[in-house]
Picture 1 (spheres, rainbow, N blue to C red):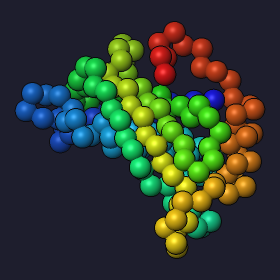
Picture 2 (cartoon, helix red, strand yellow):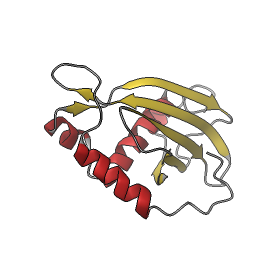
Picture 3 (cartoon, rainbow, N blue to C red):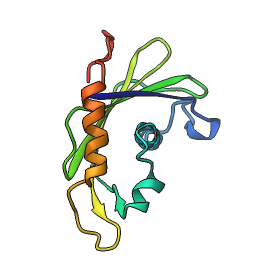
Picture 4 (cartoon, helix red, strand yellow):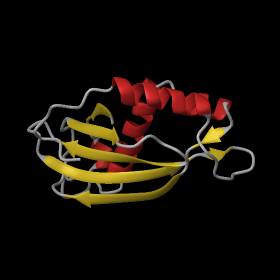
Length: 147
């Protein structure tokens, strides 16, 4: 299991008239958290594109629990539970500074050849990175993590 955390504060323009973070912004927050996890693994989008790989999202599921507010510090925990092959999932939990669960989400991406736009098995260099991370990762010891 690979676990990462990312923090963000919603901007004023990201809230609606009720003072809540607009629902579509949570998708962008999860996308940013996913990219930050991949960046820490040296698998950022520029690197992947250099290897002729893109990772389009093929599904995104979100479960809203409670609203977030303007300038509230949010922590997004991102988890990859299984060694990726062609498709892989990112699971997300978004919590506020009191560790209250606000959102749970899952994003599925697929490895695609940048030229043919056809799905393909993730390249060996990615597999090697994920294997090292799965072997070296320590489980997050948090009673609040329900992913």
